[in-house]
Image 1: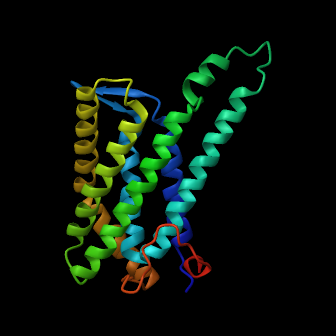
Image 2 (image 1 turned 30 degrees about the vertical axis):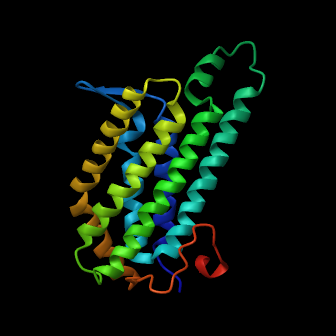
Length: 226
């Protein structure tokens, strides 16, 4: 079945993901709390993940997650490749480039592992809850899946990226602060999620249930791409 808007939703998801990974290098301060720059944008990728799974199902959401994963990997490679090219003598921006876009292997690994595990956790739980609730109470699925997915994502990223660099108490505080902010973000966005999901279901004439879906995240077939 061909969908009218699925390609646009997928592109929007990937764009948000790439921007999030790019702006994450800035550390912002809100009151006594410190956040990376992606915290205001990255939760939107989970909202897209909820919408994709709710409307189109886990199988197609799996394709989108893999697309985002490969796009992030390619972006990191390009940033690294451009960074090691010899800088022209008149250009004095090499240090600034490396500081902002230089990709350290540890941060790239943390970002990719956290994204992969968090997004698939989010999609799996939402798809299962949709069957369990028989399609009712959308808020239980969007919030429930986010609570699990964001916890996995945040804990993995901060642990892999900063373990051994920062004290354990600081890591725990960072995990809890970022996790609570991201989860609250999605809870507040629930009315928007309802509106977009309802609109897409009407336009696409689709409300997919994953009754016979193989939930293996590594199983992507040609059928999933149709």
